[in-house]
Structure formats: C-alpha cells, structure tokens
Length: 110
Image (cartoon, rainbow, N blue to C red; front, top):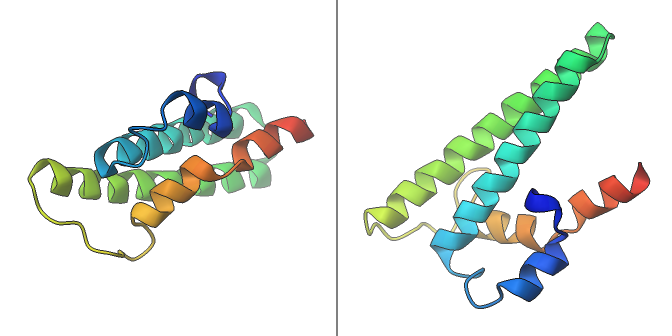
C-alpha cells in the first residue's frame, strides 16, 4: 500500500476516519495512482512488447478508476449525495481497496 504500509497497518492507525466517504475516496485515489505509476514503470522497463502492452492496458484501467473516483470526490466536495452504485466504482469499491490485502499478497509473492 501507499507509504509501504499494509492495509491492516493503515486501518489500525486511522480507523476513525477511514470509513468517511471523502477520506475513503482520497485513499482509494492514492492507491490507484500508485498502481498507475507502477504499471507505467513496468511497461517502460520490460523488453517484451506483449508484456509492455499488458502493463499499458492495466495503466489505462487505473486511469479510468482514478477518473471515476475523482468524479465521486467532486460530488462529495459539492455536497451532492453519492449514488449507492456507479458503473464500475462506488464507495464499496473504495472500501474494498482499503480492506483488501491484495497489494500485500502480491508483494509477498515476489
């Protein structure tokens, strides 16, 4: 996770704010940005064109996630009630990113 912390460490340090929509979205956008940066660096580093394409495709997915999360964030800052679900993203998605140890498991595999 961002800052080299596991999701459990983040939750242990900041349980009182992590479930508020604004902060959850900020954290989710940060995680997506970290992933975007990682995929772009890996695409540039690989010598295999097919592998680079996969990483660039993943980076494009992250850009879409960041945009959708940004749209939700703008709604919050304008006082617009959030929809319970949006195509591809919502608060449950942001919360899922926070709770998932996916990043930790991937790091442990390497």
